[in-house]
Image 1 (cartoon, helix red, strand yellow):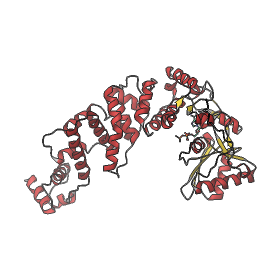
Image 2: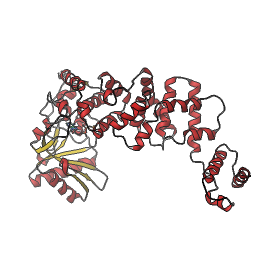
Image 3: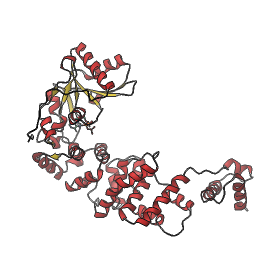
Length: 437
Ligand code: ATP
């Protein structure tokens, strides 16, 4: 229910938007006037305007031919245009970098649950009623005379103020099970709660095998978006609570140890980013690795296939298990380990894996091991840029026949550089000669 202070607005001020966006929306509104069309800003951006949160995704919808209108806007502004016929949507990219999605207001029908719907033109009211949750089923008109008029036929404002996620009809999760994950995403992001009937419907949908019918890319998209949120550890716990992790794999093990590793990822990421700001980390993948870190390689492999992860992502995720523990054991060994040995231990792994290793160590709460690991990771990152002066060509000039031994010799030379045993070109040459001799 709406709390006492609940105030239902009829207009929304768009002045919170950066001035470039605001100007553009006004121009688009006037262009729609010229065409006798109605145009609206719609969905998440309107929700976030009402919540006073930043969101500059310009999602527009027009009553009428959305693609033709998008082409017109693109012509007027000389912007780039990509048209997605299948979905009757278009994306504009403006010279100043702004992006805008334009769709036609539509009705959707689901021939089969969990498959993509077919779309037909419809009024803005119908368009809003096919959306996922009341808080996202809001629009603001952009035509000049109605600029800022709020359309909220499903009580979106009421639910925003009551901090509630509510579906628009009982068959919503069945039509589109991605909404199950979307519900959790918004619940966690805003600290809202699922309205009682919505929670019941979600639990009902989750207890069936509907999610299994989702294609790999659609499930992947939802999971990675959830893991890209501010606090994925909480989102993962919520997935577990609602028995949704089984859709990644029925034998995915969410043990206390996994929980601790997942929770430690944020600390690990914070340290990593502060220490190595230039390394771009795929955060969702680190969380997925942490989540599957106690599952068997066979389970992880099946999960990777289910999510149709890219080859690169798959390589990272499959590292999470026993191998990570073995590498970590050596990395936190208090005995002397040469810098080159650490380098060789880590060089094949991505930075995501390094962040996971650090998270695992954080979760163990062993101070000594952690500071040792910090030092070793830092040294490794420094050594990554170390190069030998000599190259294959130099080896050839020194009379060595080209062949696989080049790789071995240059590798040994690099190790010697990293360990500080050679520091000059002359020393490198002497090292090669000695090694050959
Ligand atoms: P975010 O803030 O994470 O970008 P968003 O609400 O903007 O979230 P988008 O995925 O960009 O979400 O979608 C834009 C709008 O399209 C949503 O606000 C909602 O109105 C509608 N929408 C998106 N996905 C669905 C869905 N699966 N079912 C129904 N409506 C949807």
